[in-house]
Image (spheres, rainbow, N blue to C red):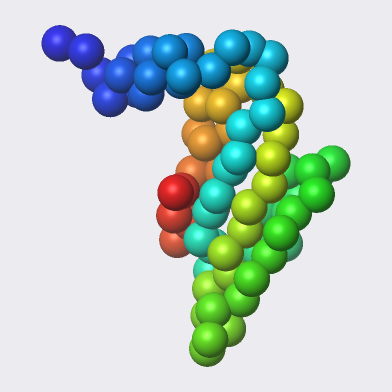
Length: 86
């Protein structure tokens, strides 16, 4: 049986010709924003706080050399408590 990760990798490889710019989008608790910023250092972030300021929407585009790099980024930030990857 094919795992969700393998399906995602196959979809990325089907949709992109590497290297390619990839748009990452996350919703992170505002208390964890600095943690995310540290993990994606070197990327120009677009940030938008929620109405009550509890969460922040963060997006950035990064040139990735392979689907593995995209997956590694998602795995890296998944260690942040409360983060949602979009």
